[in-house]
Amino acid sequence: MLIGLGLLLLALVLLIRFNPRTEFMLGGGLINLGYRLQDRLSSFDFVHDESITPEQVWKELERQNELAGGMRGLFPRTPRHPVVAVLACMDGRIDVSELVGDTRHYYYVVRTAGSVLSPAEQDMLELAVLNGVKVIVLTTHTDCAAEAAAVDPKLREQFPALISLMDERVKRVEEFMARPTIRDAIAEGKLLIKHARIDTTTDRLVVEVQHHDAH
Image 1 (cartoon, helix red, strand yellow):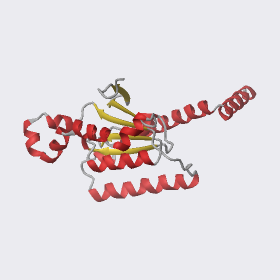
Image 2 (cartoon, one colour; image 1 turned 90 degrees about the vertical axis):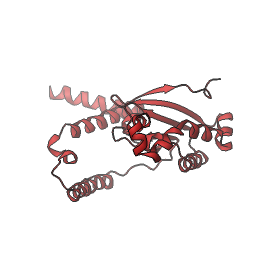
Image 3 (cartoon, one colour; image 1 turned 45 degrees about the vertical axis):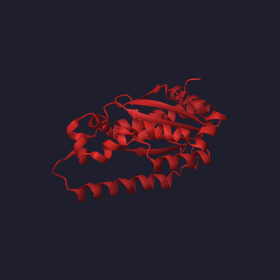
């Protein structure tokens, strides 16, 4: 039986070694397993312990960073240049590594409240395109607090700066699409922009067709 198990493991190693797609999928599966192993440990859920102080939260964050940094030192990452830029809401439920199933450094991630593409973020994304980004994914997500605030009269009054940005969200995207660098890159087939809504319960991207996507 041990011989059979050894042969099975050897076959698996050879399959992984000579099949990059299998290696990538296995790596993604192990990453997801790691997420789930941590997720179930409620005894270490220091963030939601109401008795914990901000200083204790910071100390725990430092400890976790030390552990993560040590692992990264033992197993260095491969330097890569991003080819995808993702605009995502700052909502903590959205994890871009899980979203794309890929932890390699092929992604710029821009996080803003309500996925609003303000002028500063427009500049950042345009610079990213000049530096080699080929795909931009502009996302929104389900159960968004910023979207909910935008339709609540009381919250609109309480958070005027956020609401102003939310009211202009579509306009800001149109401004970005009209930038000469972006417009020309799309026309030349060098850039693809996709609009998608993230289902925060499943991390699935639902692509939304915009008027400028239709040809």
